[in-house]
Length: 211
Image (cartoon, rainbow, N blue to C red):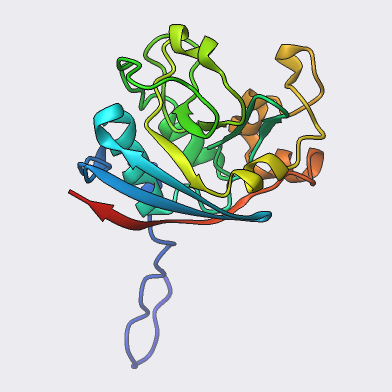
């Protein structure tokens, strides 16, 4: 320990504040009956109207994540023409790790996966977390697989259609696009290096709510 002669004692250096996105257990607010989320993307604005009655757990999760800024800066990492545009992998690997176990139970499919509807992605039953996709076609085949829409695009489907899709499907599906497991583990380091043309959400906000 260094001793000084006179003067004020040195102050401790404070580290950066803890990232609230690392604490999924704190994201527990109940969403309004309906609300509109505005996604400002690199291609334009997409507005999603969320209806809590369709998927209460999904609506609550999306409401909390949007309000906390979770989706700010995330890429549309899987865009397949005539199928979907998916987003939700954070650029910070620590945040991705924190949310991997924050799964939600599946909910009844109350509305079909028609063009413009928005649902959570999942790999197995009861594995929904933070990744979301916009149906860019009539994908009713997903209804029987338990993908439950929680909202729908009310403005900006032309923007969703224009999102960069040139990388195609992931290697696990026979393509050369984003490998989701690698994106989760490495975040933006991987995405920016390997897939620089991906479009992004610049900012997501809850614009209006009711109920």
